[in-house]
Length: 149
Image (cartoon, rainbow, N blue to C red; front, side, top):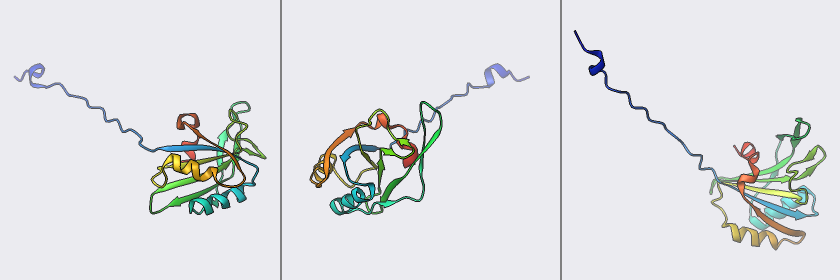
């Protein structure tokens, strides 16, 4: 009769952990330009083609727990595989990032293989009509991961 206790080897368990290597770079932009004008300025300066998206980005507000929709501009660079998003912070439905009410726009780059961060900031700052550009840590913008996925 077989001895099941000695014949059965312990099963080893391995846990496969896949880290999301998606990188986001988030820049706050202060400007009095309308969103379409700022998109045009970025297109000229950065040689990209931001266009108004037919879709909207939905964010659940912290206070009212309602879904708030935001329009945005986007562009996908086929050559460098970089995605660009331009989101106006204050829209008629609410504020996109309430903790940063002084920021007019957010420029988000996903998988940025197109520009070095410092060179990009310098180029943006040279645009007439741009008051300031700020670099934010991506951890502050967890909600943007849903937009960019």
